[in-house]
Every structure is written in C-alpha cells, then in structure tokens.
Image (cartoon, rainbow, N blue to C red; front, side, top):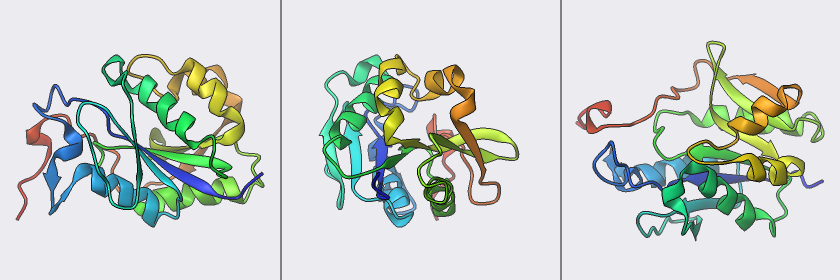
Length: 192
C-alpha cells in the first residue's frame, strides 16, 4: 500500500444559509476554498482534490472536480472526490470541509501520522477536540468503496463510521485549531 496521503476538500454547496457559496467567501485575505486546500496541502497531503458544484472553481495547486449532483448533498461530493482519487497512488485521503477555516494544519499532520505509523492498519482516523469527534477525517483506501456506497444526502463518512465503530481511530487534536462551521456571515469575525 502506498504511503501517500491525498487531500480532499468538499466545496460544492450553494451556501443556502450563508446566502452565497461558502467556497468563495473571503476571510483574512483569502477565499475559504483556498484556505481549505492549503490546510491539507500544508499538512503534507498530495495530490489535493477540490470538489466544486454550485459554482465553478479554480484553486491553485489543486485538481478541481465538478460534482453535477452537488445539490443532493455532501455524500455525492464525497463520492465524486473519492472517484477522482482512484487513479492516484494515495493509500489514504484526508477529507476537509470548506466551511471550517479554523481547523489547524497540525490536525491534518496528526491524522497522517496515526495512519502512517500503523502501517496502514488504521482504516479511519477522526480528529477529536476535547473528546468530541470533528473534522478532518482520514480514510484509508481500502474503505473508500464502502464509504462512498454509504454516503447519502448531507452526510459524508458518518454512516460508515456508525456501521464500523471498530475501524475508527480517534486522534486527539485538541489545541490544534477549532472545528467550528461557518454557517452564516455572523459566524465570521470582521476582518481587520
């Protein structure tokens, strides 16, 4: 199995609660989609795939894959991203969400380390913060097909993790950043 870990950014939504696609929202001088792509890239993931949908995206340093079924929810975007990575040499993928700009690079590094130090025995590594599961999530290649089959509607890998709790390894990422979502403009502090 390859020791390479890819990065996958889910950025296809229309941002209905936000009022516009969150991928294009500017925060601290860059779009949320660029921040998310840098998060996984700076965490050592390569290649980086970004799944677009509601709007067309160009993301420096990333492969952008359009999900025509984006309106059906995050599950279809996860499937599109995993499908795009099947031709890669990646043995695992770190999945990040576009609307979590405060997740830290160290969380990505810890997930990668948990997987690589296990010689690929870790099937799913999930970042935890103060004991609560959050994002990002690492998926070993051997579970991609089943994760994709179970991803429906607005959920990604959660159904797989519920069906196979014995395959989930929590990775403490407390203090590396915050897994909070940006749902409305009020969730983003004003840029200085």
